[in-house]
Image 1 (cartoon, rainbow, N blue to C red):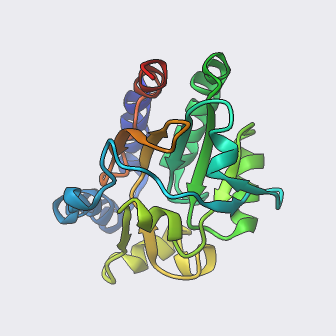
Image 2 (image 1 turned 120 degrees about the vertical axis):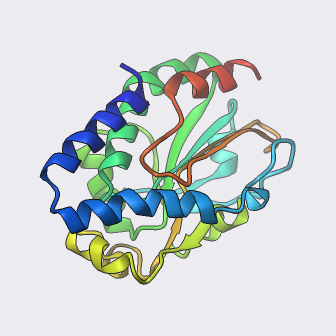
Length: 213
């Protein structure tokens, strides 16, 4: 089963048990995000990523330079520990991507705008062996053109499902889920952005991008 097949199955099962009003909003919201997304803003292949340093879940500082010290870096932008699609995706990357990256000197890091305590929960609950970085304020995500503000009419529904971003992030700005592969010179070699957060980059596509370098 592919990652996106698993995500589709999860969404289908959720629709069976969610209240009608909740299901309606959660069905419409991804479509609205796709329509509103401005692809021209997204980071472009061939451009150079600026260096950054972010705190890992254990409090250690991790820079892009650290991640590319021995090979390319796979940067996975996700929404937060409250997002079941993100947790399923990160577990899939741990199982299917991470074991292969060492062959290419590559490292993977997950990045979200959530506060550090939430990053700890993501790492522990999903048993992740890669850095889980907190980009509070979306500074790094914004540099790659991935940020947007959650519409006010969607916020009450998100609060109902445990996604009050004022508690998790400090505000209502998020980053679109995305995967970027950056080479040792920090040149972006692969970009895949998913405004529809119920879909994600397949592990096979990430590995193909890394192997092609």
